[in-house]
Image (tube, rainbow, N blue to C red):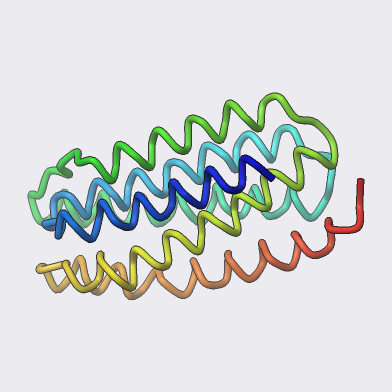
Length: 173
């Protein structure tokens, strides 16, 4: 439970950092790529470590979907000749993702599954909040804004799927 509190505090600080900075398109590009990579890395770990069919399937879906979003984002910034610009938000996302992986590696079985899925719920909510409150409103390039709007429903679907799995794991120990 302590880890969840730390993750929620981290998500609040990430949103505050993004909002305060008023990111430019290059910074938004870095945030998008980093946010997706964090979920790809966690998904790969979960797909290899979980024995729960639902968790494993969800993790594989996260790897596939977030790899696709990253490809679209990289293709777009390449076409626009925009170099993603590292920024405190991207750095915070990366650090949080690395900490999550360290925490997950120490867990096994149902404890691993619950921790992974609970983090996925919190993380997808955090990303949706950032998309809605900061990234879409701050995007200046119409194609970048359109990409963010286009991928938003997938993040909503991921959040709902993670919540469903979280509920199914609630009674297990």
